[in-house]
Length: 218
Image 1 (cartoon, rainbow, N blue to C red):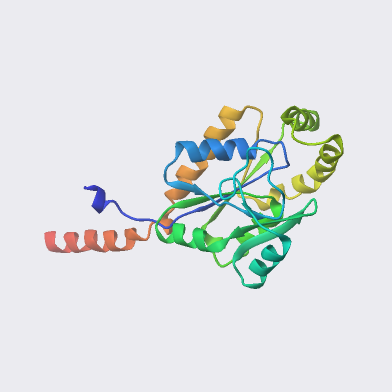
Image 2 (cartoon, rainbow, N blue to C red; image 1 turned 30 degrees about the horizontal axis):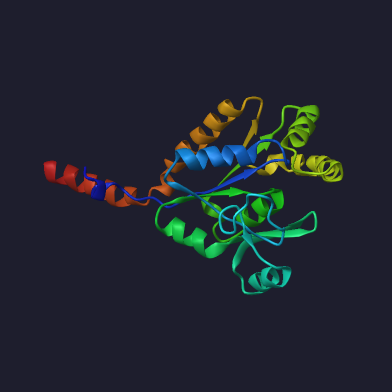
């Protein structure tokens, strides 16, 4: 079988969610670095850039009026307000990737995940929720990042339980005790989901061809 003969499949929408600090962003970066068939859904946000962040790489940085115009025009697959800032996923790049058989990875919270699952593209969603091993470890990770003030960290910790309460809405739930192990499990989930029968549209024609071969051999 040549490269041109490789059967096609529809692209997946892979959602990773977790409380802030539980490891989903690090896992997402590792998945993208290791898998050329997977792209990242770069969110639009009204949050100002942090040092080192580049527009179009980490986020599409827009003003609140620009973001609201995107909502009104139906250009976002999902959107939510978090800590006073708006976040959302532009839908056109996602739909283009799906049509080409490429997967899209989402690093979003439960609100965004819920909207994507309830969207017209929801049948292609695979959702994974990452839990921290303990509350103390979650707080330690947040403080060790050195990115946020004590007040912001306190707000993230207070919001963590609300995030965790939605764990049962996800297809897969993993406890991130070890980053390498958790990454390997997420990769396994993606590999298995790619092989599901309903995500292999080429199978119908292939099986019909097998049936013709059986008939001709009789």
